[in-house]
Image (cartoon, rainbow, N blue to C red):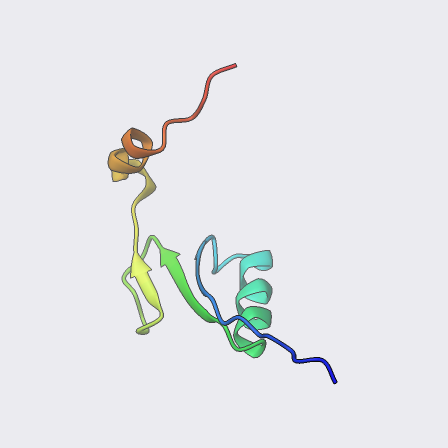
Length: 68
């Protein structure tokens, strides 16, 4: 008999309140994963974090977009 290894991941999703993100988040949660949604509005649950992409300059500094 073969052992099944199942990984549980913590996934952060930008756009989780949109059409695709809503369904993706639900599917991932049903599969047993922890999902954190990045939202621009005030968070309404413990699984949401407020994020302003315009103020996320530290992300661009840490992971710069490569230029061709």
